[in-house]
Image (tube, rainbow, N blue to C red; front, side, top):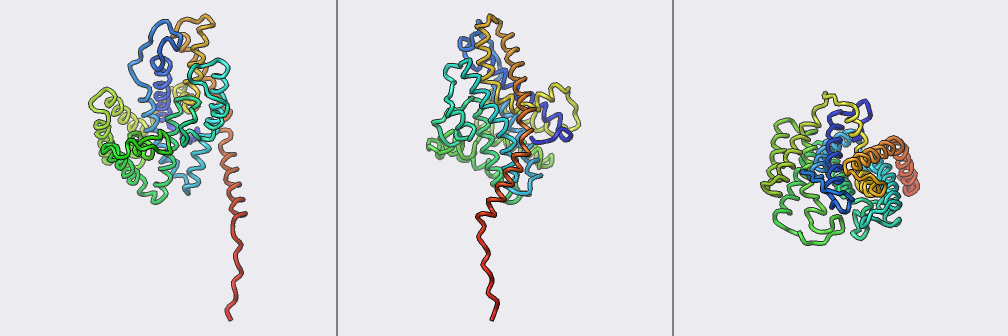
Length: 355
């Protein structure tokens, strides 16, 4: 996820583009009642936006393995993840809270305090703090994945994939046995051991992506097949299961198509997909509702204009914030931690020479 322009894979950015558009179109068409959006007609969309989130998770699993391979320690890995997420996240929270505050979005506004608490990731551990945008739920899942991955991978990097397989298997066992399913927990979603601590079944998609990076083709087929079978037992024989399985296969194949070249505008949407995901829902929906008062009655025109607006905002955030401050923050954290260690380091007692 941190590739520079020379090392980026068009296929990965293509998958990100598809994923974010899946989510965006769903939120602008079928996520809310037509009365809430101010549409004069319903706009059915046959695919749930969460399929796009599942694809994001597969890509994330693949890219996290790449980041870990380039990290010398657990601390360096976590710092890189933090600096990858935080600048664009803070900017998007500010923009979303501001736009919603000005245009209004009934039932989805949050206070300035809650917005600040979102910037500190406190909704991870406090159910009373509302998300600035409901779409952020998947970012919280990603953060939990990063933390667990770092804990496991750096114990024995060569066994990182197998330890995460064991972690996912544990989540499946707890989920299917129902153990602790009603237990209140201090971590989002605040109920159930398998969902809160083991983020099952989402861990299946991260595992698929990790396998694509770290396993040979035979092992990939075995791991992906096992994950798809597990998905069947989670969701049954349904269209939801079919989409989850298809996304897994498309993701595991797509992330490895490194030599494929994609049309540049599509790749660019993939490059800015993180801030676009953060900004699209509440900002876009608020704009769509507001355009009704401007006399723009066509829902399709309003969707197109909102998509153009949030994509432009995401491009600005990506250019001005997302990568611009990343390395400076990394250096600042490194310098601060080194200075702190110097301060707290106990002085070495002089050794008494032997008599």
